[in-house]
Structure formats: structure tokens, C-alpha cells
Length: 411
Image 1 (cartoon, rainbow, N blue to C red):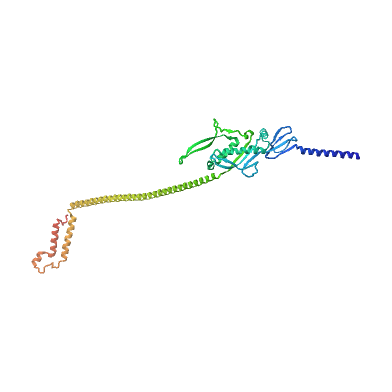
Image 2: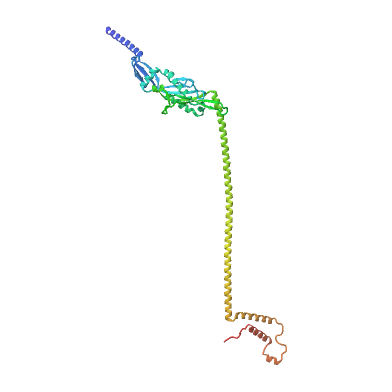
């Protein structure tokens, strides 16, 4: 029994030692690897084979393999401070076409190739990310931004060329540096008569119109640009002074233009107000003229109406006069006819009555004696009546005779 137990303990000890040795070998040789998110790993086997792990997580590798880790995106920063980028460089000194200098702050994010063959070629060329960034991407970034600055002068840049400079920068990073041709322009100053030579840089163009470029390592390795920005350009003091003077001049010009615009607007407003007032005056005068014309026309119409009324009244008066005349003529004619018919009996009777009334009145007023005081018998007997009555009868007969009236009643 003791013999069997001793054998069992010996086996356990051997197994334990073997396990420890195996664990040590696994730890030493490490046949497993792990790729973090946002990275890729280039694996080199002991036999010289290379492959790339793009996926995140555990993967199997041959023990003794060499693993090199690259970030999927390499950031080259030239801000003059540590920003956590792959490379943190100082600001880049650039020179514009007019020989003025400035410091540029840039940030470029490079996307490493997503094809295994391109990545293996890139790794074979640069070995690791640090060498790639410091010896490949950073110098290329500096060269591109310097070459872009040669395409404009400082005044063009601060006068609105910032976006254009960024476009030149990104285009060269992606597809290769422009080949530039320097052109000399000779001018003469109109004031001093001094000869000036101006040099301008132009992009060389191929016969088909394409830009001629220097070949880029990025294109050869399949690296692309995720983003490229020129965050700031800090000009040298003389440029700042020049910019300050230009800003002051622009400000004065802007103020002058604004004053001119204000004056023009005030003049236009005054002119418009004058025209408006003139229109009002013309309208008021036109109203008065119209009112006067209307009043005159009304008066003329009233006069015409009054004339028409007068004419109508005159015509009516004439008609009335004619009517009266005709009536009078008719009445006179009728009376004439009547008088001719009865011998003017009515007139004669009227006259006779008047005569008789006059004699009656005269007789009534007579104060003398109608009967003689002394009478003789012969006279009385022969007279047969009163003398006054006889007188009246005689006068009445005379009047009738004068009027040619026959007082006898004809049977």
C-alpha cells in the first residue's frame, strides 16, 4: 500500500513540474495575440512570413513571431505643443511668394492602407509607426505646406486666400507635390521710375492641362488623407505692420464709403422729399384749379340755366301778352259785334242812366221853387202840370235824342 501511494505521489510531482514548464514555455513563446480597437498588427513569423491582423480581438500566432503595432490613423501635428498626436512638432516656418515669412500650425490625419499587401510593403519600408511618422509623413507634410505658400503672397493670403492655401496643401498631400515654374516680371515704378523685378510661382502644367507633380510615397503605399487643415498662420512683424496699415486704410476707405453712401442716401432722401412735396404742391394747385374750373363751369351752367329761364319767362310773357292781346282783341271784337248788333244799346243805356243820375242829383240839390209863386188861371189851365217836372222830362227827352235812343216800346 505504501508502495502504490509512493508511485502516485511521484506521478503527481512529474505532472506538476511538467505543467509549470509548459506554462513557462507558453508565457515565453506566447502563441496568442490581441489586437486593440483602432489598431492593426503586422506579424512576422520565425520563418520570415508576414501577415496583417486588421480585426479587433484575440488571434493565433506561431510562437516566436514578431508583432509590430500600427494605429489605423497617424496624426501629424505642428502646433508647437503636445496634443496627444502621433507626432507633435513645432510650428512650420513658411515663406510666401513675396519673400515674407510666417509660422503655420497644421494638423494632418493619415489613413494607413486597408490592403494587406500595401501594409506589408509599408512595414518593410519603415519598420514601425515612429519611423513612418518621423521619416516619412512629417517631412512630407512640411514640404507640402511650404510648397503651397509659394503659390501666393502674404497679402493674397490675409485678403481671403486662407481656404485656397488649405486646398493647395491637401491636394498636394493626397496626390503629390506640384512642380513650380518661377516667372520673372519686370515693371517700372510710375513715381520713382525704378525698375522692379517680381517673381511669381506657377504650377507647371502638362500638355493635356494636368498638373505636373512629384511622385508621392502616400500614393505608392496606399495611404490616404482623412483630414488636413492649416489652423493658423502667424505672420512676421513686418507683415503684421503691413496688414495693420492696410486694415486702417481699408477702415478709412470703408468709413469714407459709408459716409458717401450716407450722404448719397440723405441727398436721395432730400430729393425724394422734394419731389414728394412738389407732387403735393402740384396736386394742391391742381385741386384749386379744378375747383375754380368747376366753379366757373357751374357759374356758366347756372348763367345758362338762368338765361334759359329768362328766355322761357320771356317767351311765356310774350305768349301771355299775345294771349291777353288776342283775348282783348277777341273781347273788343265781340263787343264791336255786339254793339253793331244792338246799336250800342248797352252803352247808350249806361250813358243815359248817368245823365239822368246827374240831372236827378242836380235837381235834388236845387234850392229854388219848383212851382211859381204866382200863377194866373189861364197859365195853370193851359200848362197842365208842374214846371220842374216838365223840365226834367224835356232834359230826359233831349238826352235820349242825343243818344239816338228810341224809348218807345215797340209792339
